[in-house]
Amino acid sequence: MLNNTDKNSDNRPLAFFDSGVGGLTVFEKVKKILPDENTLYFGDTKNMPYGEKTEEQLIDFADRIFKFFETQNAKAVIMACNTTSAITYEKLKDNYNFKVYPIIQSVCSTIANQKDIKRLGVIATPATINSHAYSNGIAKYNPDMEVFELAAPNWVRIVEEHRINQPQSILQVQEILEAIEEFTPDKIVLACTHYPYLMSALKKFMPEDKFIDPAVYFAENIKNDLTKNNMLNKRCEYEKFYVSSNPENFKEASELFCKLKDLPELKSI
Image (cartoon, rainbow, N blue to C red; front, top):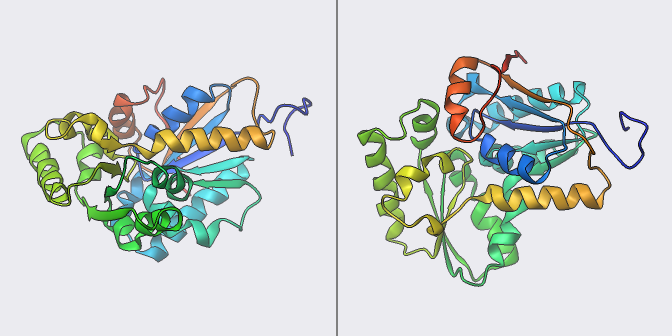
């Protein structure tokens, strides 16, 4: 149900969530092409990093966040987290009255149809890698594309703890890239929304155009679907940010992608 009298405008908010600041890479790209949308963003910093959690924990976290977004009358929830898309989407997608956009399922067809990619590397959290969500998703659209998946368990903490340019962090980035380079991929998917924050370190070892940020395709797919379903808003009235812990840390870590005017609201769910 729309919140205004204009039948051609839907001013209910788009709701984003992630374990922390990583989802802001998606948020920034969506807002760039959909600047008139009202938005909510929930960073579950208390339970970060998601990539180390069990399936049961991840479903519980996502379900609680979905329930909160339901109280805020969200028109759609954007799973700006590869781990939750891989593990929880199929379990929760039909439990609520809003649309749910999962990043992995939304971008696999786009990546699979790129003619210049024969061999694809995927770097993600352990949970995403163990789910094989990317290799299975790509295979549905292009079974001939070879996919090599590799976990980078420390990269999320590097971002959240503001250690991107420290020598030890750069060494950890180098080790992962050297391992995946043995597969000789044509492109490498940064399959965690935190990982684009590491581009300054990544491009020390490989050209920037070697990497795919799925958020670029994801944002376009969201825009196209909202347009098709006549769910666009005409004027942005608010952007609200929530975290489950450490609002000061979240604001500081967000600076690369999204300069927040105020501290996010601390929200227990």
